[in-house]
Image (tube, rainbow, N blue to C red; front, side, top):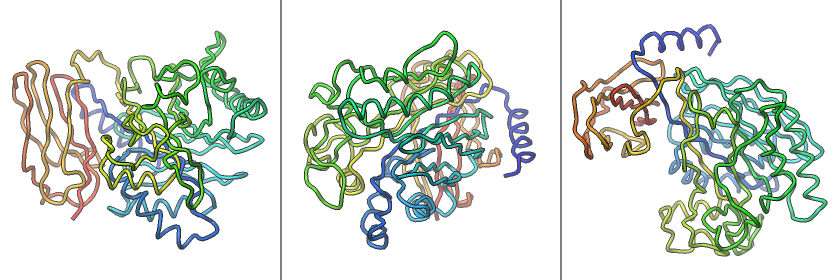
Length: 416
């Protein structure tokens, strides 16, 4: 989309808004485990792609950042065979830049984000990539750094990881105060006292380049008491490739800047960081050992056979104009099902106090294509059932729930 059209769209949407707009965005990071297997690309697309698809369709992320993309065509392959398996054009891939060893890639909802740039930070090992995007409906800009730091424990590897983070901090330290940025990926970090982790969190008086970890774990992380936070390994047996040993390491994380920890603009939704599939009952075991209380059986199998790492998700609110919100957003419990939908779906939400409620369905141009008039509603749980999509073209929509002067949304995928 040309920038003239982009900013015209943003201006139009802002001019139509009569209340503070706010949009929840789910960001997911996943080490894909050498995708595709360059020794047998054809077999890999048949064997692992169905498992990747199962997981992605279950999580339904707004943005997916991946590590261990193993060849120049991996980004387009994953886009075509996995991300857009439900609907052509549902996701767009950011510009892919190959570097030494394996690489990073990014995928985002078409029409919801506009891709600006991919800037690699070269290290002695693998590149760290800075993906910059604009959220079209709010106008917020975010930079997402994707990393895959040096693997293995021990002082030499600790130093190599710290050197990689040092190059990253040179970049983030130079950013203007108040910049919204995130880092996600496979950090290969074992404790909260490792040099690279301390360097990421180091809050200097002279800059605003530090990161915040929303999960506070002290000491060594691969202990039983931290089992709910582990992301590697999904397996206890060796097949294909990848690490075994069961779930016992917290390698994969999503950290964010001070600006994102400050009210207004882009903010982190508290307690939203989730290692997909980890129910806390699989310490040193395979993630698909039943029962798994976190995900359905087919998703647990998908996680097990696709990669040796679990994906991690976190939710961020893109607010655009900063207003004081007096509504308890955490207790809205706003959901849609089924999603994707072919003909009818249900909208559910709960209110913790009486409020004026309005529901809109908006297309990717910002046009309201379905409107449910506002009404004063009492505290309680609500279901709007059998909402028909017969008049909607296949594609991506936002279902907006407007509660008093606050608006939140959920992505709806319509397929025919």
